[in-house]
Amino acid sequence: MRIRPRKQVKQRFIGNTTFAYSKLLKRIAVLESSLERDYYRWRVFFLNKGEDFITQPEPIEHHFHGKPTRYTPDGALVVPDFVYKEEVKYFDVTLRAEFIEKTEYLTQLYMQRNEVFRVVTEQDIRVGHRADNIGQLFPCLHHPAPIEEFKTLTQGLENAGYTIPQMVHLASSKNLESIVVKRAMAHRLFTCDLTQEWKKLVLFF
Image (cartoon, rainbow, N blue to C red; front, side):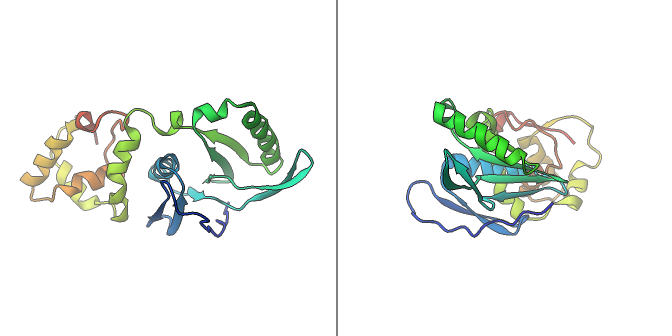
């Protein structure tokens, strides 16, 4: 299932607005807050093969309280044959009566389109230290997965966990650049719990 991203026109350039380009998705995203930035990185980082993620997809025209209006989701997570339309808000906003009413309405509206509408908050996005860790790794996604280097790095090692400094030392001992470790992490060649502090991360393979 394919969704066309709408043309993203930024009306005001203040606050935490950033522009992000994904080499994987081959498109630019306009992110209007630090929470949207962390949301974008989280969704792109954990995309699986055959999935897509679009910021600010096409709007939906509808009537709310009898008035014509337009709603644009913050993101669309497209998995095989299914679409999630997502609104990004801080948790305290989701407790407001007017927001709850709007959410219930949009849930029904998107259900009629065979899509799932859901709200994503900082409690979903910023679990532990995951957002900060992804922020460190995200630039590495501009580079291809270091498949051959990873094979060299892990060859002959026991199937056990290693800290990042230990992996960097092993890389140096095998004449590999230290950045290989971070790029392997970014492309999820290692398994690790990214909710933990960076210095406490243990890499498994």
